[in-house]
Image (cartoon, rainbow over all chains, first blue to last red):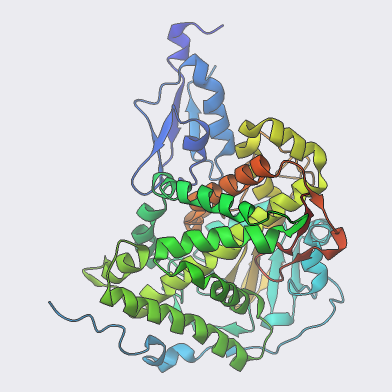
Length: 75
Length: 423
């Protein structure tokens, strides 16, 4: 389905203006997100989503109460 | 080193202006029409607010009451979210709806910063607290919380029926927050009184209200003095030493924040634990599924938080305005019902059902926007551990007497009497 070239284009991103530190992203997708010293979400690394983590990434997007988590480069 | 004399005078007496607010007539009794006369303090609401909210969402969807000097109750997710995000037009200077409106001069700090604060002060007061309440910081409380939950279950030995609200749920957040603030663990029963005085005594005569609130602040001042004498590694000493804008906090800020952490940390989580156990006691399918598959518990707790969100906040309208179809006046209250938002069918599929494996759950149990519950990571840890230990130790339980279950009145809703048959 997803060639390495295609999957490497999918990335997660946090809109820091919207993030309020609910922590749903780092609860649901701890391989993709962490938190800073104040509990705000942070993207780990450059945000690239390995194919095996795409479901986690989608859960993080769909469960953020502030709509702060975005998935880029899909489809 | 200079002696810290901020707490030698009672800060409540230092500014008479702060006692000037607006009192409204206390109106109690049965509600004539929920769309025009609602009251979240009446027994019908405490017993089961969801059908009332569902009807209002269809009919209004923003209900009004002349009680409390005038208040509005939005019931759609969209309206609740819009108000939570709009700190320009809605003030947080009092977040408990009552018959007393504090003076506008109390903003932007409010009586219990940062929950009662408006921007820009809010951001700085909140920043002081955030590091102590991150997921990693609260994880340090988990082993002691788990051990304490086990000790509570141990105490049930020999009993066939226990009160899961009184004998279990209430004690867990009391113990955890007492530990974090550095208060004596045996003071738990007093904390319960403080919570009831502040959050449930809304319609008491003003003098009674003042006396009850004074008891809390006397207690907190005694704790401050104890910590001044014997500083230690806890939140009370942290707040005493904390600085904002280059100087130590005002004494009213220190004590107001302590009050917030104590009160907001207790009955909210107590309610969430109790409501979850109530649901599982009356829903054997969900209970058996979680016993068989504890890995589902984090997902299920989010659903319990959505469906039984314990916390409703309040706001005050800043200026007269026409807003989403209604005419709001300056100083009208808003009852900001996250529970109603969480059951809006426009936002959630099967909104009225409890679906313990719900994968997409953008609920607002901890609020939305800048006032997101600062203790949400702590609450989630306590709720998860409390349910894990209970289900591990007591996998089979039922409601001993459904008619005996009672619920708290007011803005924080959860079971206060919950007899469960465990033997």
